[in-house]
Length: 556
Image (cartoon, rainbow, N blue to C red; front, top):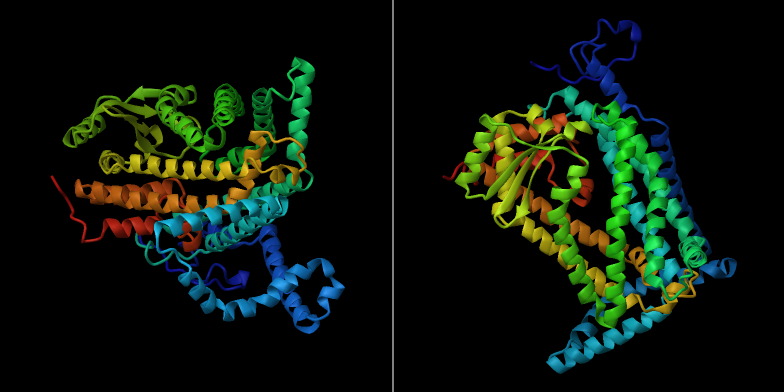
């Protein structure tokens, strides 16, 4: 069906019946109503605009004050004297930058002994830095810097979601109604995310400023000692109880947002299929699994650290690597069936086509399941799991309802591309490298008493030290997560190319479009937002790669 070209609506309501089509086939169409909803900026958008204008005004006023009263500011506000000194030193630092570069170049080690000496001196200086670091202040700065950066990305994405014009690159295959519905869904999720993130940031700031982490730790220690007689020497026992307490508190604080997301946002846009009873049952199961599985893992982790001393990072990494590999095995086999029903895919064309594809690729297919994803959500998925010669393919029933047999087989071809190209092993390796870096860095901080005292602790429990370290680690964690997303996006392009070479170019492209529409995925994301957050490339980029003539259309 041919769609009307977008035109700017005229204002007089009396001429509504006579004016040209705006977004749909007539002035009062459902498309027009959806477009008006998407364009409308509500209270939250006004708050965002007000905050941005306020920040701009503060920056301008600050610059004027510095320019006019630069000599008097240290006297008027002596507490900010270090900040003024730093700002004042920036010009000289910039002019001396070539000198610094030459100095570094002249002092670069030329022999192995010099390199080892430089490394030893650097480690010594780093240890001295740890002894003098203002930990609480650093945590607050890191936390707010990352929050403001991500909030800015969220606002950029929100501005994209308010657009009603489809980009020319997708206008030919994405109906206007579907584009607007996806943006409306994205706006509702964006509103909830902005409020939740602001609440979480304020919550984190309050916890840090008022030393609530140590307060909870000592409350747990006192309670355990009162009820069991286990004193401070039973750190592992206290840590397990503390872990459970933190889990319960975190669940309670996030519950209102999760309920709103599930029963308001998801239901409004036709995705939620859960009842309150099922939701509560799932939450209880999750909490019980967290306690019964998480408790022993925490105990083993702490025992390894306590027993292996300063070299614990290697043993702790080995333990967590084993836990992660075990989780990959037991989660789909023992844990996920607690929440979903897995049935063998019925005999028929779809099963025959998938089995033929698996045989063609020598994929060791042991089981082919369909899972009742529609029990909870209208979203769809398919995945491959298993080790060595025991592989399983799982297809959501929602995917079967949304796509044709050929399209589903093309999606399975994409998933088998991940297996064929060893993407799962590569991602596991990347995760293990990241985990090792975390534990090594943690080993340098865990014994620093100043880190604990700056947060109001007079003891040094390892689990609490890990919580403090996670705050410090946030900037590096963001960079590593971004790097992981870059690798994941490269794998998605590679798997698409694999499916295309199998001869599924057209059905894969049509399946991606169909799933984007069915799942109301964002059609035109902000480039910076998607680069930072998305583990999968945007739809247009994937379609462009699939249509790339440099990729062979088919290989037998």
